[in-house]
Amino acid sequence: STPNWRTDMQTTTIRTRSLRTACGLIVLIGWPIAPVSGQPAEPPTTAVLVQRRCQLAYVLLWKKDFKAAEEEFRKVLAADEGHDEARLGLALTLERAGKLPEALPEFQRVPADSAHFPEAAAGQARILASQKKYEAAIKLYEQLKAKSPLTDEYRLHYCLLYTSPSPRD
Image (cartoon, rainbow, N blue to C red; front, side, top):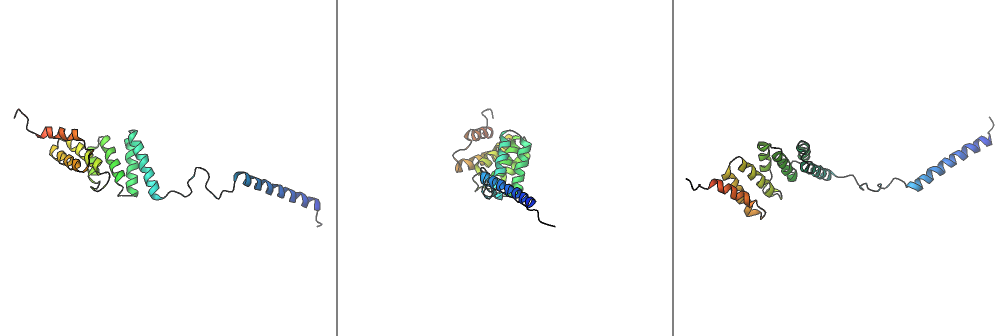
């Protein structure tokens, strides 16, 4: 078969136009080798994702969506068992949802050297006081008062009031 220069030229022209269009688009929008504006340069690490999930759980707690908050805190703790902030959040969620028997052990699992211990101890003392275990609540409030200036002083006095002998006795 003889080459048809006219058909070959038309095919070459169409390919050239397509290539120019593609190059023009690449110049116009940029080659996608760098992150698009608003995207992180690298995918977040597991620690970052765990922290974001913990923040989401606190938002759910503040919105009083206790079931969803509890689920998120449990997911964080499944990924990082020693995440004290999530442990405290789970305990606060359970307390506010009225699940006091479940909340108390979670408060107790926050280590004493954690930055979240004062809030955990105060939560534990609140539950003990609500269960009329004033002696144990007083002990916790006294320990907390020695460690943290932001103690619930009025709660301590409330417990002391119930443990002191009444004037009628």
